[in-house]
Image (cartoon, rainbow, N blue to C red; front, side, top):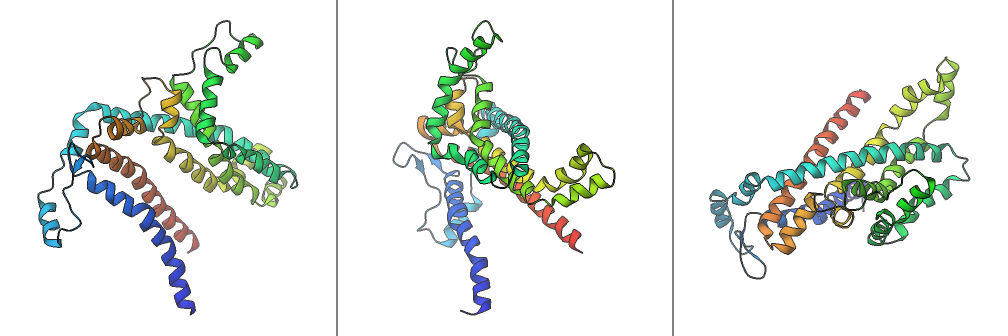
Length: 301
């Protein structure tokens, strides 16, 4: 195989991966979102059939109905679910960053022979099932749980707090579950930073705090961005944590999707909800990546 063929193969593999595991599933969900609900298996009446010719598809596209998407704008439930999901995901991401940054910084500054052990401790929770870890928090956060017993033993509270079935329990569950996704990119960015830059800044009169804000923090921005995306994106569509730890008032789009798919069996509306959720998440990321690439090009000129 020649050099040109290997180059094209290397370029093609990521695009092929993207096509199979992202674009094809998305297209299937997008196609169902234009269908009509039907009491049958599957529970929808397809608008587009694979056996239809190109001319039939074009004719159906001209007569396409957007009823399922219009329905989402008429029912405030979906708007509130999107808004609540974005709020919970944003606050959880900020909390994960506030906890994860000092943790990653300490790991990056630890002696070299301790770092592999510290990284292993961060990823150790992944050795247990995600569902079991979330269930464990039910025992910790309930009124007679370990957290209330500990706080009462310390004398911080007199009566047990109601934490489970509230938004606070959801924040705790999301931050705990996704904290490694914040710590690992931050650690990677901080660990490879050149220490001589800090020493040079301090030699030139910077305090340790000033050197951190002028050198360490800007150089760790790629890790911050990567960590925030890895926490924020799955947190928006989270279903298990709000269902097990949140109360009936905790409204998130993941729970709404579950109800539409499995309780109401309204696959067309559920597909429309999923499509809009994907657009809400993907479009800002694409725009951000585009401007970041242009900034890198401008810096290299």
